[in-house]
Image (cartoon, rainbow, N blue to C red; front, side, top):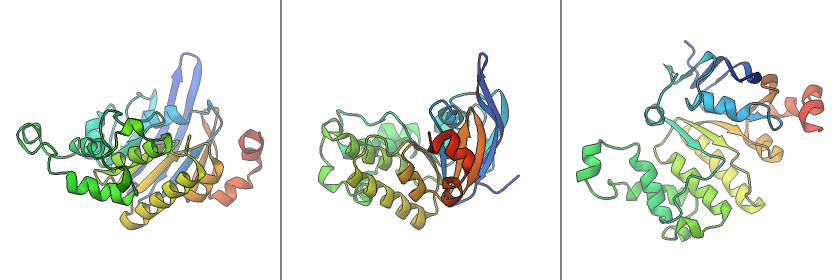
Length: 248
């Protein structure tokens, strides 16, 4: 078994007669920032959901930190050190930024008994404040999440995903709907976290400037299959990628 943080082996998934993912294999090493790109309908989200156990693949296996994760619940994935941000925001609009981040942390800390009879914040306020500071959200700490701009909520969503100190984070279109200033801040924060903690990232993204400047390696999907893999420079100059995606 490889020492890869994430190992995807021969994953395939069909819906009726539609082959959404076709025999996809790749590995992601510790500290790597991998991008998954491709046109709409290329199978990126289906592949993500197969990796995370939200869909059962028709064929193939996924290992995270050496553990086979077929049909594993999200809570068990969390205990393996997996974090995720969603294309659709997962913040609670009627809660403050601080409380959102504490709730995200509670999912990973302690037992049901300790949550019922321990302090209401599960002792996580200090750690939540560190995460708020890291993502430069101090001025929004006590604001209701629903009152924030979409880009600000994206930063809160990211802070929630990192609250448990994950070893692997899957980011689903983190740049979507975020203005350029906030996008630059998000990219800088992600790169800093990767450098300081050695956390591994897998990123689905349509914003090519963002993904090319964030990722160390990129895999390109088209019609459910891998058509190219390489550094950002190699992908930019790959004629098949240009014809099927970048030049479209």
